[in-house]
Length: 394
Image: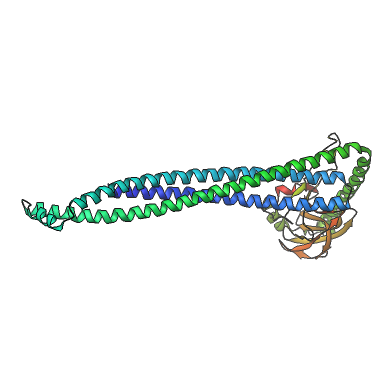
């Protein structure tokens, strides 16, 4: 019976350990996601500070504030998930403590009975007389075995009680640590909620500012639309020229590297990011966040907010086809990957030139700060069709 109980206890402990390991991994994932969101918010904070000093672009400010609010809400949600994870761990630890306490109580009671029995038979002479008074040799052996087993059981019980008490103290200490960590997360969550309220207030002020000056911001938007349309026309022209140069028009032999294109295509959803930061402007057609019937310029790529001096890296092996300078976008690098293209805009400096072969992850330049905004504009094209980069990047 003791052996069976021991096996069950071992199995239970193993199960509890596996659950605790999974919970610890879950907490680690929450911590990693929180770190990412906190990094995003720090980048956006710097962008807003620089933007307020150097730029009067209220729409850009509103975009940054709203992205920050989105990241803040996600961070609060992560805090909520982490609090729930801690609550689950606390519940599990408390159940383990209850089980250990019950086991200790049972062992202590059993040990007390053994001690009382040993005390009643503490005189060695009584032991000898009890054994010698046996009716036969078998009975004498059984009585001797009883006394020997009694002593052995007492030692074993005392050892197990010590081990249980040690484990119990350890679990109690872990429970207190978990409670303390959970309280820290709750305090952080309260601070995040306060920051969120402040940011929502900032957003409301900028919205009010935009509404008061609609004519002014309509002019700014028109100027921005012209820059975007000029960029889109130039990229399309560069892609067309690159495709012609790689086609059979120059000597009858097709030179497009379709093997490289196949490798690029096979990595859809796995390409590394050109730089790490929050996406503040996504692919496709969007409407003005305040004047909701007003269409914004169609975005053929994504815009990523970055810290100053961030290096921009190639997302895949390829050949640099062209480096151009565009109003509002500074230097732009076009890289060809067979019949796929990646385009990197708003660079301060470039470390490659037309004709260079680049490898995945190779630095191609450094992001620029334009009108107080340190942002990378990034596009992916297949033939002459723009793609949503977020479906290609991991």
